[in-house]
Image (cartoon, rainbow, N blue to C red; front, side, top):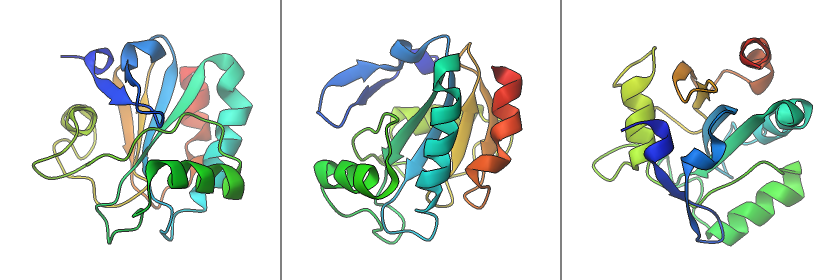
Amino acid sequence: MNLYDILVKKMSGDEVSLREYSGKVLLIVNTASKCGFTPQFAGLEKLYEEFKDKDFVILGFPCNQFLRQDPKSNEDILEFCQLNYGVSFPMFEKIYVKGKNRHDLYDYLVKNAPTRTGKSIKWNFEKFLINRSGEVIDRYESKIAPNEIKEHIEKLL
């Protein structure tokens, strides 16, 4: 199995293959609307705006597993992100990022990350940087702000 074999659901409920993002540099983030790190949406959007024309995409996956910090519906989450942070990068349906119900995407990311390999997601806004070939290049803890990843993204572009 590789990253591009994984299926995810858009906020509309439509299932898509990550193959749709083949050849692009990706930053995959588990998000939450009521978290101390929620303001990172602004920094993520800034990165996306700066690099989207160079085949860079951020994929946001809401998760309610950490102190129930994203309890609302997918539609409400998307509206919150767009109204409060101007999020225009793709957001997907809420998923599990840890535990026995962990989504295949996060199972793949955790097992293939070069740092903290196999270790569970600790909190909201962990980030995974993926190269154009679909390989996990790096994993960043929640406290790492989006602007701190900028030069890593630039190297891959």
